[in-house]
Image (cartoon, helix red, strand yellow):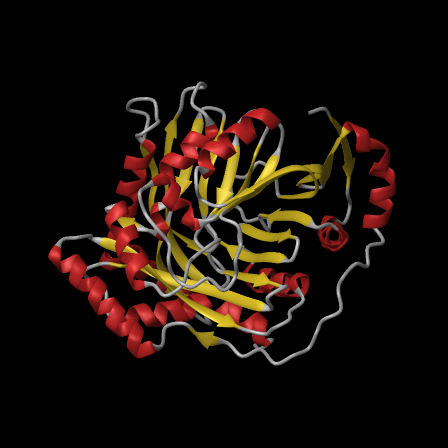
Length: 432
């Protein structure tokens, strides 16, 4: 696919980003990825917008990765989209039978007509060649964009899919599996939801992003389905022969004072339970990467380093490897999906047990959003700290979870879930 590339300098990049996202609302399909200038993001650009569709693939989990592989190879262009968690059923002999209020497709990718890449104060525009005469017109419209929707005001009532006492019972059941040796770690999730609810997706996303400023923020629109994400976690990135994964495991709240915050950081660094959670998943990731890596190239670049975000402190590790140029990028993704940080170890046993105990089909939550380049590079986040919205069904959902190990207690895990859910609840209820 031939694309016209055009670069310009933007003086007020923050304002331009806001206008660009507003302008994008007119399209049926749009993906906005924003690093919020997070210093350790290791991204190829600061933000990207992809809009309008030349071609797309949208499917259930059945044979999904093979279909994606064929699509990516045939298109040989930039494609943007998502991988739903339930693609696990394509990777292994598994099923998903829990309640689904959202009804998103399991996999969706599209080839965009128009791409905007932002790095520092430079904007690179990549339009398919038969649209290049629209660049000047679009830039004028972007810089005068007023496409923001009117907010529909209604009282949002957030419900719990699993109530506290039931959560404790399920956690104890999970702990029994761990004590029996069926698994040694599992990520257990619960849903918060609101029915018959109308929200302004752009406004909610902007509020969520403002209070979180994460390195992997996403605004995704596919017709009437929306993902509004403040994800702090990278799932997988490929650049040339290098592949990196950056699992998050280990969470601590933020303090009001700098002194207290430093104490919490030091405590998190040394916390044996939180470190054990992280190291277990690092081992799992190393194992996943070794399936396709060049021999002896898998290494842990960073182990249990504390990264600070507006809402929480997190322990993040970086695992990398090198791959042969003949290895297909979709095979790399399939070999590691779903990501270890959202499943557990051993992975297949954990997947079966959490499917049994959870009440909701995860769908896009704990899946991934990102892109492939024409050269086969890619970058995907982990869909956590996110609000999902089906505007047709008027259904709003956000889920949170935590890693359960032998050292876990139901009370502490429940508190951690509420801490992770705080930002989503705050923006939906419009409270401080």
